[in-house]
Image 1: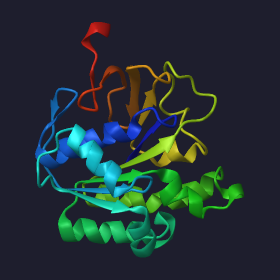
Image 2: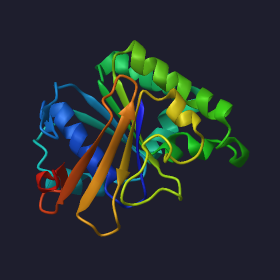
Image 3: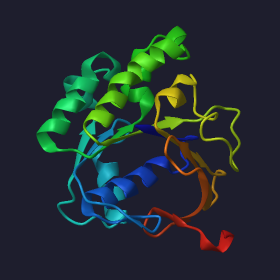
Image 4: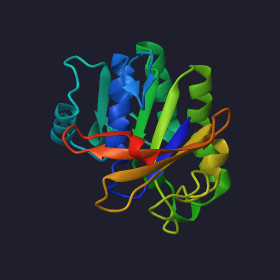
Length: 221
């Protein structure tokens, strides 16, 4: 389990949609082949029209094995992932074999259910994420949570662990952290990668306007 965090409206969800498609179809992400497997995508800040528009732009093949859950369905069937919702995800993983579960975003799935005084409480946040992390290990699946960055983080790069918004418990319970950095309006971005059993590295990316994807920017190498 881990976090992809960045500032609002910088392209995090586009990147995760791209990864979800690659996982479902056995495609490639940043020149690395991905073994195919079913995906569950909790798109809690988007509507069906926007999701279909992004799929069309990214040229998703018809029948791509990604199950989307929108906000209204999430509230009815999951509720807070810190209060039983994680068990629902585990059940669906058993039933449908989901290998990648995307939670977009942390605040919509967990944060909105916490009191203001709890959002930066390490103990509370750890308990909220513990079930997700445990199920990810037990089921040999990846749970990717999209989140925001702290206001102090810079647009041109930073620390993937320190820059995630709120409690440091998020990085403590996570197996990996991706920090996404991009100046507003720029077609270039930096992806800082860190975590347990993960090679720390920084990838330089470029936005493909035509297809709505992030690609390695070789001119920076």
